[in-house]
Length: 320
Length: 320
Image 1 (cartoon, rainbow over the protein chains, first blue to last red):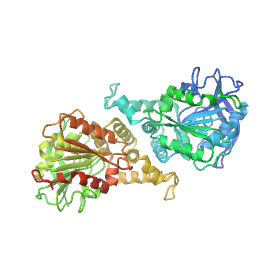
Image 2 (tube, rainbow over the protein chains, first blue to last red):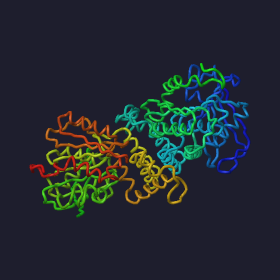
Image 3 (cartoon, one colour):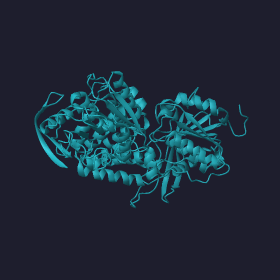
Image 4 (tube, rainbow over the protein chains, first blue to last red):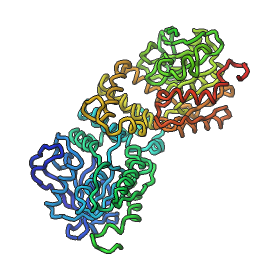
């Protein structure tokens, strides 16, 4: 794996502002000249090092194997993992515009597969919309074609927490988010009403949430969190005009997802299919909740392998 | 309606501490000597003035009509609505112990019906458990026989918000709570992705949440909120021994409830029925979410009227 920071110059945002001297961080797994390029887009608090957080999808023996594919993990504009941060209001389209420029600089024109979960799925869909000629297929997991009301509400109150305190508030924001990522069934099974397993006062689920908060404040800052949740809120391709040459789209809904319910993901696939685009829908059965795309990535890879493998080949190649 | 503050003397808590000179606030609708007494228990941020927040259940022409019943609305120990506040950790059993004493002082021995939703339902169930000889029937709405993991987690992070700021944090706690009270379907239908209807920056759902927060901080304080959420967390009658003379129990699950899922309410009814107690289950179909017991109280009253009316009569009277 190689990490690089790519200077992409000034970037015009959807809002009209211009960000000067933008940098875009990427991780490259495998040989860029192997002829099969997959682009892996990350979720709200993820980064470009896709093999680290998505081992069932990226890695030797995984869905995307660096011995067979060149896998590009790409950071979001606005994220503290090496790309340019900003206090401007940016959109998913802005994030994808910066990513397109970075791939231009890398000399990667054609992407056989764009894949991501949650906010990463939004980027994959935006790529298919904005650069259809460059994408062979987009896989959109745990995300519909617009951010729904409940997700906006969850993001809003997380930003309220940041406004109270940039550190403790970020920890609280993470805890709030966890309750939209994990299902009731999972929390009940794992923690029930048991006392904290580490012997502190309170219930076990409180210790779990404390630990999640402590981990996040070590690796993300409030500005990133604020910028990227606003970008997520702005996402709405539900009334977009889909180009005729839009690549095939695969939406994957997570059965227990309460943040981006499977029903909304299926509705998105149907809406786009009605516009004459090849848009399919798969349901990933899991009782984990929204986070299943990360926590049960091996099972997700199995589902995707069964249904998608033949598509992850260079354009024009014969289906295997 | 008459409001009274009743001095009940010193109260021993489950934790062993003694609260001196406890006062208990009540509202009495109708004639205490009419022979039919209903006790109405309130939820986390409610109060004893039941007709104000539950007009479909309490009032002329409602399920409980003060022309036919004496309806006692009773405040929770620890609440800022006129009962003694405390920083001690109290339980639902402590709250009910104080209420029993208050009814003793009022000379009300027999309660034909104890009814409440959410934390009010927990109190109704605790009454049936702790004073079975005094209760003719308990109706437990939107509450199981124990506070589940997700509800504990939601309460925990709300107290985290209070710890950041007693005023703004209380507002944030209310917003967090609203996302456990209102269903995704309701929020989507009411607010969608529309801009704020009052012209402020942001989405309409943000304005809704801001308004809810602003209203709550005018009427509740952080101490009440902290004390009562801890009491809610402590609630667990799932392994209780149910007295043989336990009155009939009616559990009502709300189909779209994510805080206290209908499934858990039904499980509670089944668990208690397995112990040989007359415990039934009704499902209240609503897409509103947990708050349906308040927001759709007229429909709830219809459901309860159809199924329960014959029970709301004095002990020994013939079923009408």
